[in-house]
Length: 454
Image 1 (cartoon, rainbow, N blue to C red):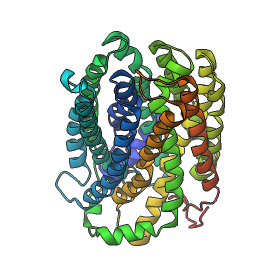
Image 2 (image 1 turned 120 degrees about the horizontal axis):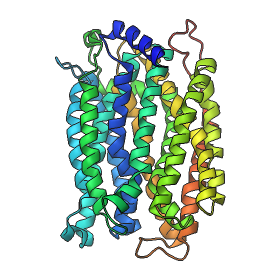
Image 3 (image 1 turned 135 degrees about the horizontal axis):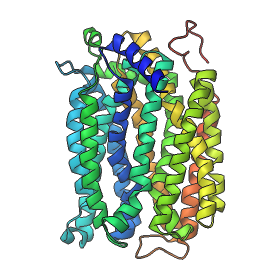
Image 4 (image 1 turned 60 degrees about the vertical axis):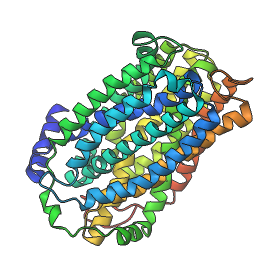
C-alpha cells in the first residue's frame, strides 16, 4: 500500500507541481475533528446538560440549516473566482482554519451567567453554532473542490479519496468515540459541560495545525487561472439545469441527513435506550468506526473492479438495511452488533459518494470549459446541508410524540424516543436515497474513452 501511494504521489506530482494525495487526504482529519465534535455533542451538551428546551434547539437548528445552505454557494463562487499568488483555494483554507478553531471553542465554552439564562443560552448557542457552520462551509467549499482538480483520473482520485475518508474516520474515532470518556471522565465530570469546553480547545488547535499543514502543501494547477472567471447567475442557472445535480444531490442529502441524526443522537441513544454509560458510548462508537475503517479497503477494491457508480448503488441499500438491527438493540452487546451492520454500509457510501460527485464536476467542466468545482459543490451543499431541517424536525418530533424536552424533562419514554430517532429515521432516509439512485445516469469515469452515461 505504501509503495502504491508513493507511485501515485510521484505521478500526480509531475502533473500538479508535487501535490501529494496523502498530504491532501490527511487534511480531512483537520476539517472533520471540530465539526464532528459539534455534530456529535452539541445536542447532548445544550439540551441534556445545559437544559436548553428541545423545541428551542430545533428552531435554532432549522435557522442554522438554512444559513448553512445559503452561504455555501457564496463561498464556492468566491473560491472559483479567486486568482492570487497563493492560489484559488488556499487562502480560504487558512482563514477558515483559524476561524473554525475559535468558534468551536466558544460554542462549547459557555460562561456561567449565560448558561443560567434561557435567553442568554439561546443567543450564545445561535451565535456560535452559526459562525462555526460558516467557518466549516468556508473550508469545505475549497477543500472539496481540490479533489477533482488535483487528481484528474478516477483511480488516482480514488486513492486520494481513500486517504481522505480514512483520515475522516480516524477523526470520528477521536471526536465521537473518545469524546464521551474524555469530556465526562478525564477532562470533566458526569453532568457537566466543562470537559467539552476543554476538549474543544484541544480539537480546535489540532485541527487548525493540520488544515494549515495541508493548505501549504497543496500545489494547485495554475493553468486553471487562465480560465475565465465564472459568472454567478449564469453558473447557477447551468448548475440547476444539470439533471445529475438534482438526483445525485437528493441522494447525497438523504445520506447526510441520516448520518447527522446518528452523530447527534448516539450519546443519548446509549444513555436512554441502551441504559449505558459514557464508556459504553465510547466503546460503541469506537467499534463502529474501527469496523468502517476496516471495510474501507474492501469497498475501495470493489470500486477498482466494478467502478464507483455500481459500487455506490450497492452501498446505499446496504447502509439502509444496517439500521434495522439498531431498532432491536437493548444493551451494549446488541448495540455493537447493530452498529457493525451500520458500519458496513456507511463505509461503502464513504468510499464512493465523493467519486460520484466528482464525475458530475468533470462532466460540467468538459461541457462548459471552466472549472467551477467550488460553486458546484456548494450547490450540492445547499441540498445536503438542508439536512439540518430534517434534524430539526426529528428533534421536534421527540417533543411532540414522546414528550422529550431536555435532560431535566425527558418525558415518559426517552428510550423509545431515541430508538426511533437513531434507527427508523435514518433507515427511511437511506431507503429514499436508494430508490432515487436507481434512476440516475452518471457520466463515465474520467479515464474512460467512451462518453457513455451509466
